[in-house]
Image (cartoon, rainbow, N blue to C red):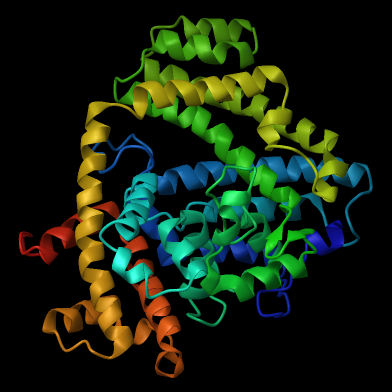
Length: 450
């Protein structure tokens, strides 16, 4: 792979890039994502704790903003190193790489349904159980999209189809940003074959055309039919996410009194500089959450340095598409171990807290109630048999004109698939709060909303 193709600034649909004074094509991507409704709704979507009432606990929006800051720095520092080595194409600078990674980081969770990963699992379980009869109407590839429903693929659908210019290339982002967003550049049918996190993928069958266009326009190396090597900058996006998870999950644990300062400090200490400033802070009388916040910058700085070094050391392998594992596994052992240990601590003491488990059980019921109504109405709409007044009103709620214009001209199987995907767009776009409210409304148990 070559940087002149990987950094392609043309927009989806082979549209020309538009650079303005002080605002490059890649920076325009950043702005389009920031101003989108899909991004704004992340403010009320689960990060770790569904429906958290503590304002200090992270949500998907604050997490995405923090990841984008780390990703921008990673991108710029990698870009500066590549500039010094004269490896970047003419007309490209380090800031461009920072803007691309920052934009991809902003969007990396944009496709998450209500209740985060629990919501994903609920959708998959519903189609494999109560929704089995709908699968029988679809092709094997279409079935894979539903039984392995994936927020990453829903995010690619939002970016390329459903947000802004619906069914006309969506946000119309640059090829470079979209390729960097493709953390798992293959379709659902190939998800089980991947050595990188089996079950993960980045595009549904419905976005096959856009997926191929992005991969070909950026010169991603093909591995198999509709399966490509990652864009090198996708590794920086993933590393930024990993680095932030390692810190913010622990901070949230401290904030919610699920973790103790002593165990958090013992975990982070190997990656902290041994200075008088750090020792004074650690043993100060500040509350635990404030100590973690003041040390955050020093920890992330160490993580970023390690990530940049790992990228540069593996630069040629990244371009050849043959680097094994993620970037974190190529970081210096101290950083790798701190991040992995932080994840383990969070899984054991934060993710398994009884309140979180209770809410996740409730989330399954909420998602199930919504899917019962939405998918049944979508099937009726696809078949032109939505005479049931409830189905009609659900289609009105989804948006009667939000379905593809050519729907009546499609074969029945494709019509059913497209209508189900549109219903999932509606469901995935909901916030945790609205999903909970609407599930109650579907059952006639909700209070009136003004």
